[in-house]
Length: 137
Image (cartoon, rainbow, N blue to C red):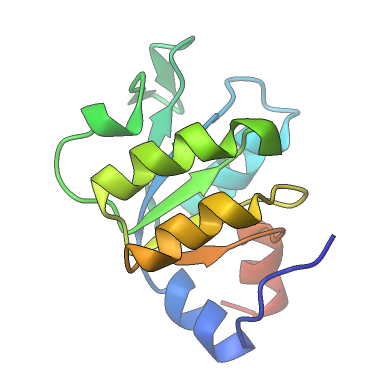
C-alpha cells in the first residue's frame, strides 16, 4: 500500500497541531488504537476518544461520534478498517478538522479525495506515534 506524499517538514507541521480526536480508540492497552493515542497524550496532545462502546478511556470521556464533540479539532486520527472510511470521512468533513490522519493500513482514495476537496489534509498509511518518534519531536 502506498502512503501520502507529505514531506518530513509537512508531517512535522501537522504534528505541531495538538488537538486530536481518535476514532476507534480502544480501552485495551495492548492495541495500537490505545497505546498510540496514550503516547500522544503523554507527549502533550489533547486527546478526545471516539468509541461508542466505552464511557471513558485514559480517564477521558468518550464520544459516540465525532459530530458530538464540542469545539474544534485539529486532527482526526482514525483507527477503523478501510471499508468504513467512506462513512467516517463524510462525518469528519462536517467537523472541519485541519487534518484527517488514517493510521497504517488504512486507505480509501475516493473518500480521501472528498476530504481534500473540502480543504482538509489527509495523511494515510502512517502511524502518528511512529512519525513523532522518527522525526524526534
